[in-house]
Length: 251
Image (cartoon, rainbow, N blue to C red; front, side, top):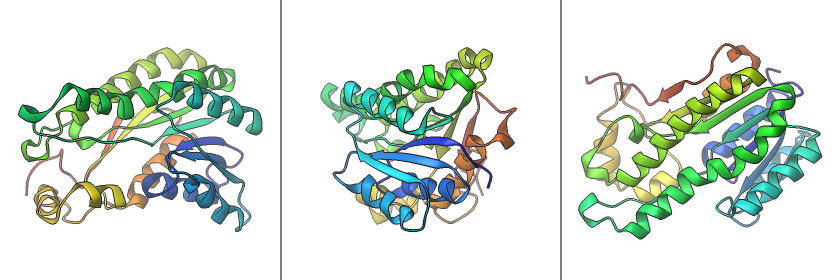
C-alpha cells in the first residue's frame, strides 16, 4: 500500500501508460480520478477498477481547452477533498521532417504536448501548496537525443519544454513541499506507438537500446509509482529516462 490514502489525478487514463498507472496506483491504495479525451474511455477504465472495489473514477475531458482542464482539476479536488499527486501523462503527437514541417503542425504539437501540462498544473498548484505533494510529468527520449529519421523537431522541443518547466516547478514548489519530476520513456509498445511507427522504424529504434526489448506500460508505471509516493521524498527536479539504456550508450 505504497500510496495509501493519496489523492491522485492522472491524465490520459483511457489506455496505454495512463491506464496502467491508474491500475497500479489503485492497487497501492490511492484514490484516483483519471481523464481522457476519448469519449467514455476514462469512464470505462475506471469502472473496471471499481468493479474490483477500488476508489477510481474517470471523466471525458479535452485538456487542450484550458477552461475544461481547470474545471476538471477543481471538480476533482472537491471530490477528493484535495490533491496529493498530479500525474500529467496525456499528450498528443505530430511528426514531420523539419524541411516539411509547417507552422500549423508545430503549434499543434506545442499545444497538445506542452500547453496541456500548464492547463492542469497551474490550477492544481494551489491545492498542492496546502499539504505538499508530487507532480509527475511525462517527457520523452526525444528531448534527450536527436533521431533524424523520426521527424521529431516539434515533439522534442515540446518535451524539452516539459523538462525545463518541471525543474522550475521543483524550485518554486520546494518551499511548499511540492516535488516535481519527469519521466522520459523510450520506445514503449502502446496503441499510439503502433499507430505512428511502422515495423521498420520500430526495429530501427529498438536497435538503439542496450536492453533489446520494447518498454512496456508497466515499466513506466513503476517509475511513476515511485515518484508519486513517499519513497521519493528527497527527489525533485529530476528527469528519469526509462528507455532501455538508449541514453546511456551503444552495444
